[in-house]
Image (tube, rainbow, N blue to C red):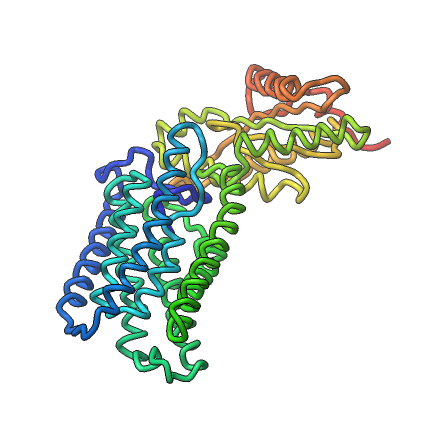
Length: 425
């Protein structure tokens, strides 16, 4: 997985983008990983691997050609993003298809060539900070050479044409599992050390995706023992499948805020447009709440930007857990979030907002090992006939300003809040 590309929160490196901005524990971890990768390369290169035919040359050239095609695609997507488009989520992960096949079919020394090529291609395409590029490369070196150790050191004979299919399947499954575990563990460690947040999504579903891509590479390697043409056909079909799946993944990620994992502005507008279209057709109404953390600048000053990021992530998670399944929770920008509630009246939305405001006020947020109390100002609006999308959002935004002007830590409009808290007659 490529940590230099779009990914769900809290999968993000510090914003400053330089080595000195990383926590000291993260720098030590990266240094240790780079050292392990370098030792693996030296040991692998020094290991005797005599070549008696031109087959490794041809096979390495074919694998480099496949990875080059993916690298060109990545470069086009990256240029599209820099010119105003969005980068595809076809990241360095897709390279595991061909790299996995390479470590199964090639001597370990030769397998280093496509691994290095793909790592360099990823850096050229993404233009990420040097330590991110080295992390991705080191992760592939350690992970793929571990797979090679299983395939060549333990079960090398199973790669011969007369090997039993069931035993070869075990090689593929064991190698795919090894790669998925190493990738997940390395990612979990660096993300925790750089963000201070443990994200269990690193262990699911991403490892399943990594294992599936590696298994596809194993199938390509298995078919090679039958015919080059079958292997080529499988590789082509695999590329098409990866592009298709990552196209859907790209759409989901393009509508997701990378810091909090909530829906972003584009995703909110898309969903809001659909809900307002339903409301105009006479369906149920829709309400919206704009939430703004109080004194967020002071949070950044006291706990620094890392503490502010932790506050946003925890606040967003709390809001997401509070909302109904059919609701949409989005990050609007900065410390503002939006809670879209289809089928809810103004009174009902204010009641829900008041419950959430009280929940935030009573909660202690962990901002880097220090508990902190936060509060939120909430503005609520309900869609009315003839109201445009911009007017709808502006109405809720105006209520937020009213809540802040009235002393913060409150829900506006007050009339609806009073009706929501009034006991039934």
